[in-house]
Amino acid sequence: MPKTKHPISAKIKENQAYLKEHIGVGTSFDIGYRKITVLKKQVDLYYLTGLCDTAIIVELLKKLVEINDNEKSTLKVPDIIENRLVHQQVTRVSSMDEAVDQLLSGLIVVFIDGASDTLVVDVRSYPGRSPKEPDTEKVVRGSRDGYTENIIENTALTRRRVRDERLRNEIVKVGERSKTDICISYIQDVADPGLVKLIKDEMKHIEIDGLSMADKTVEEYLVKQGFNPFPMVRYTERPDVASSHLFEGHVLIMVDTSPSMIITPTTYFHHVQHAEEYRQAPVVGTFIRWIRIFGICMSIFLLPLWLLMVKDPTMVPAELQFIGPNEQGNIPIILQLIMADIGIEFLRMAAIHTPTPLSTAMGLIAAVLIGQIAIDVGLFSAEVILYVALSAIGSFATPSYELSMANKISRVILAIITAFFGAKGLVIGFTLYVLLLACTKSLNTPYLWPFLPFDGKALTQIIFRVSVPLTKQRPGIVHPRNDNKQP
Image 1 (tube, rainbow, N blue to C red):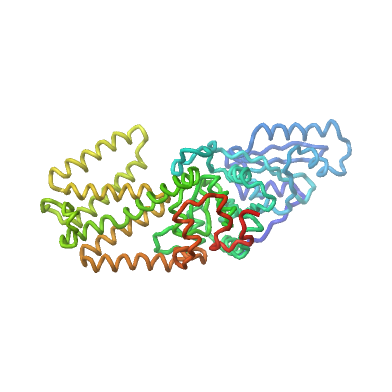
Image 2: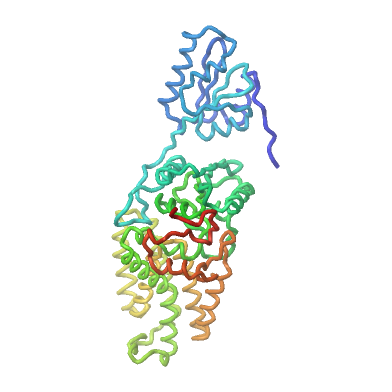
């Protein structure tokens, strides 16, 4: 149910009482309050101490006090005060609810006795870090800036690369209590209007107290993922990657307090590409892409295939007879694989939670304990450690962290099915894996495009890193209004 709007009272004391009751003026220490008199009219300024630039507040106060020395007329005090607020963004607000929202977003709210509206000055100065290269998307050549937790900086980083008058940055507030700013970015004459409308409608229907997890909460409302482990949207912290997708016709969703931008819609193959491929020559980029795709396939299918050869040595070609453990261990191979895979996951979680100075020591201890000693005591065979490590390296080579985790789950399930049902189990498991991907859709976009439905030209650009001058068409899967990338 929409809230009833409270109009701003012309009596300033009523406004004071409202703010004291609803936002805790005088109770919350971070809500600043300053009362001055301008031409015999009381003027109240409210602001958040942590989100406003103090120097600007002091300058505004000086200008307001100087009105008493330079003006005599008391007939148009609100207009005089508005003209003296030396800032590029000053607006009038007639609703107390909107004024409170603006105040809690970091803007200055100015109430004038006798006026039925209030002046809002955008002096936000959000605390945060400077733009730097994201840890998960490093490149050898290329820009070193990255998105931050400040939505204003993030839109500026995008504007720097997309200086098109048709770029639109539409902002909405989501969350009954958090009132989080969300920016929907798209190029007006390129992006599909239906897609833009769909995303806007989904945003309007988000009913939640707050977005404490920011972009992830928005994603779950947007794509209705359910129990499907595969990522439905792509995340990036690189402005060049985000800008490239805007040019193709994608829609970008920025959530305040998060450095990760949501790119929609995306397919499986969007998650296997990396900016490094486009910072190298086409041949080198193609080679890097092939190696990466090989690593991703290895992270999914290497363990189930090796387990199948261990279970049925007759399937091993004569040239590969060395595959398989030399000695029968005390623990079944499938349990060894699962335990080793879980051990790798323990290491990953420990690396996240371990301070950087201690992470090297932790890695050495883990290598000794899980590696050599575990083999010596008979807990694992040497080949189990080898193939689990190769699969883990393939997971780490996956550009998308979300996709690597989904592939890890798929690998474990395939290994278990293979352990119970052998070759038939592996074939059935692989078929179900492909069927799951084929049936998945992200915002009405087929997940396996351009493989299913088949698009030969687009698939060629997935397999090969085509030179930019030869890439003249935007991907058809986003239904761009303008297909030509080069006029």
